[in-house]
Amino acid sequence: MTVARTLTAVRRTLLTLLGLQIGFAVALSLVDSYRRRGKRPKPFPVTGPRTVPVGDGEITTYTFGRDLYDDMLAAIDGAKKQILFETYIWKGDEIGWKFKTALTAAADRGVDVHCIYDGFANMVVSPAFKRFSPKLKVLRYPVWTAGLRFWNLRGYGRNHRKMLVVDEEVGFLGGYNVGSAYATEWRDTHVRITGPGVWDMKRAFADFWNLNRRHRIRRNDRPLLLETASDWDPQIRIHKNIPRQWSFPIRSMYLEAISRASRNVWLTTAYFLPDQDFVDCLADAARRGVDVRILLPLKSNHVVADWISRGYFGQLLAAGVRILRFKDAMVHAKTATIDGSWATVGTANIDRLSLQGNYEVNLEVIDPAFAEVMEDVFRTDEANCLELTLSEWEARDLNRKFTENFLAPLRPLL
Image (cartoon, rainbow, N blue to C red):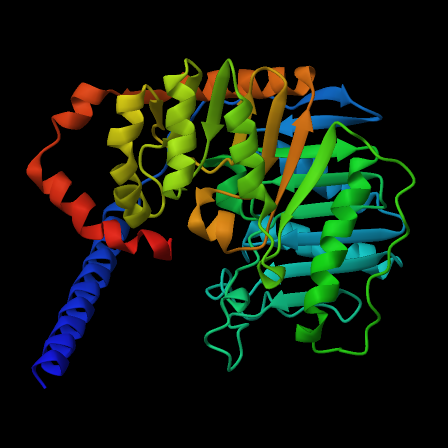
């Protein structure tokens, strides 16, 4: 009887502690949201679109949303056969309407248009915006996908991908969602690719569509069929996280590349909440003399993620990793470049949700010219950063240390 009472008391204590941690996190978020009201991000340096040949195609890099949206809309307006459009957030604002109008016009002129957006990410978007022409084939990935099988972890992943494929000729992929704020106020990275890699992007879209098409109202739609790729490009690979199949290759891609690094690892991410093995991989690279730099937002749009991520800073700084904090605006890019030859651009952050939970897609490129572009982008961003030093970190006050440690148990949730 005593043992049973003890176990009950322990469970209640743990649940109470978890409740306090979640309540504290909610309070932090509310306070931060109140403080941000009316504040506008300051201008930040960007690099203009740059195009380099890679294999049998080209890759264009974008670091400013307005440039990207102009080219995406131009591609939609020029579509002749098919458009595959997928986004995590699709705002019902000026930019969101531009995309909706362009996609609808394409469908009206006979183009086969498929659209995917995430229901949870767009819960606050007006229902009127989410009413589409019947000529558009739209898949709203539902807020709840696990059904009655609450224990099925494969059913909890969000669709965090952002892609556009037009006529099998051109594809766009990266961190940009669709909305007016992202056009000028957020620093993100996207790429436009041509050549054989576009077919892999189309297959990534089709795989998700066919896997989840049961969520569409018109269930009699045929699956999205594909022809077999005629060419392979050994310099470009598309990696897809598919939680329903328990497949998460993007994390493995990062770990393999970092483990092979001999000169530099320059990594940019919006949210940094890795597992311990990922932290150890970065620290080991720094200890063997690799120039490891992690570029993060000084203040992201999720204050709780900021606090929790700081729990890793001590061991990374002690190992020689440099931590750079982007100031005055939100950096939302998910990129890395290694040894002047390897690079990745995609939708996956360095956190548990992206690397081991959500549907994500990343482009992996092995090409010196593209790696040079990504290094130039990193240097431009670095010029707008404040570096965190080990002495500064160790001198932080007790309030900060308490908050970091108190919120640390919430790491598995993010």
